Image (cartoon, rainbow, N blue to C red; front, top):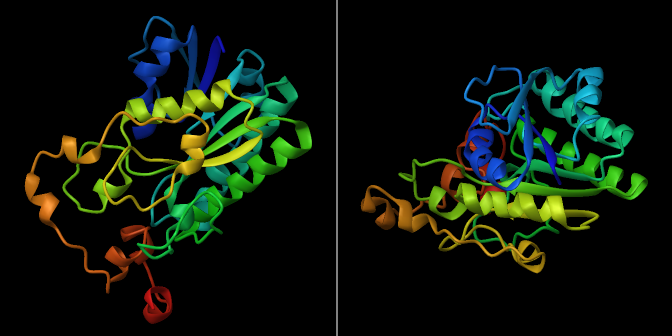
Length: 270
């Protein structure tokens, strides 16, 4: 894999993984709606819209693989807001890859695909979707597209249900879902190098009391190097106790699930 297209490269995840990806690949083609100025020597930038298939086809024609990180992320987005970047955009990525003869795509999915599952449930890559918002629904849709393109056209697509990416580990739940940049890049490299067909893994590091059984990632060779508790700045978070009677603490999706919730709390947590 010499030339890699990275969509959403100006986002939080894109900025986190760029340095390591640039170190191990000959050239990164970065894409985003927002301009990226801090290019490394082996990076170039193509500004464009995920909803524009012709743009993506033109970029995909000159790369060997795609790491698709682009799209809107947030609890409050409506269906109409995520439709173009997340749903149409995901379809355009896989279709542009197919037409360009690209066989390897890494798809940034989300742990919010199972966001309404209770903490403590047995959750792995085979668990049925329980999305907790329109953003999460769009990621479930993307996983279905990935499965379809892998089966129909012989592509290799790894969907990584990414947890928390960032340095703010002041919340107890983030200790369970955090992933370091180098651990996430290790998963991305598995998707770029292995004939996986279609697989789902969780993008989490070696964290204590994890929400997810990530044995499928381990089967593919994933060996996380980092652990959330080693990166906390305020150790008081280590003694925080979740209130599992509340939606925010009681389900995997936390605040994303609680945002605008008007359902039956007893049914979700019972």
